[in-house]
Length: 309
Image 1: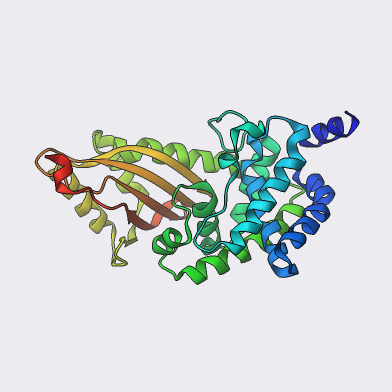
Image 2: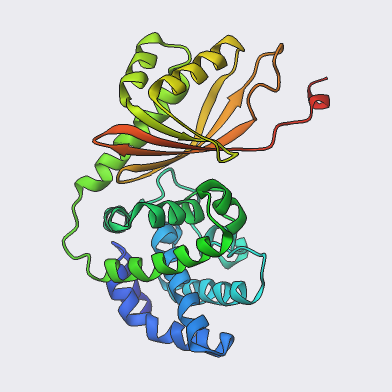
């Protein structure tokens, strides 16, 4: 019980620095035993700690931390030797393990972990931060999907993730003085987009607010890779949706880190134009001086017309 009590004290609030220092040598040895070479073992352990950083709030029992961490490391090791299969995240561990808490609204329930994660993520360059957010904070997390959304080869996605994990590990260890306002501002943008994206289709005041939020030189990147520039292009697209009776029904997921927001949205179409918009899309918003300066769209496949008959 003494060891369990000690771990419990370290977990509440979750002290990643302390846990990292205490358990990293042990899981490094475990990964080396499975992978057989140092490079793969280090990569697997880095991947595992990123999962801990982003999902640690789901752990209910403090004395389950080490078995939980070992399971994540083992999954990460197997991922490296099974091409085409994605990493098994915390939420996918067997329920019988009794290590995962019930779902909670916030991904970062523990303030210490939450604020530190937002602070260190914001330190990553945009291209790395976008890749990490898509991989760990969205449902479109396969290498192929991330490559399509970001417009880079799969090999570049792998390279960016590897680079990100190394940088995050170093940033986390040095994150002693955390700026707590970072999380508050991220939450502001989440709330803003969750309200304005569907609301602008029905409320003229919200639509005016949305147009004001968009920079004159907005860059829009479509699923096909085609790029257009200018706020007017956004307005024309919005007007076209209204004309055909299409709109964003809901924002199903919204994650912000610094000046970058990733959203998952669901569209609704009219009976007259049932295929005008896809059923859903991932949007990435990049802001400059709090104005939307770049927008990327990744549309899901449209339903077959027979589905509407």
